[in-house]
Image 1: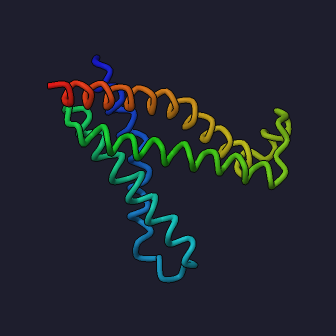
Image 2: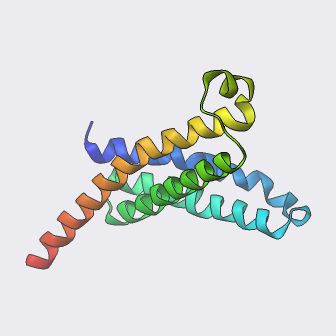
Length: 140
């Protein structure tokens, strides 16, 4: 499998949960405005950009690289913000604590670690591909 197809598949898988925010659209009037912004950002940046970017990068389209880059940058930034929020809420990095408080600390920490561990190399690969392709077009 080619590198871009793997990146496309990972981006689609990362973007699909963002589309789950579509299920909340009918309930948004009861949410505070900050929560509405978070849900809309997740739908647009993660869901639409991720899914569409993954499909386009799979097909080799340059726009797929741009949309995938936006998605992975968003996921890494949100994960870093999650790390700081967990730290501010008193996370203790011990197995017993994380096991006991898995739903409130362990799961968000694990998901954020995975997003950063997969996201940073993918951002690097996508940027290199974009710069290499853009550099080739400029020299022609």
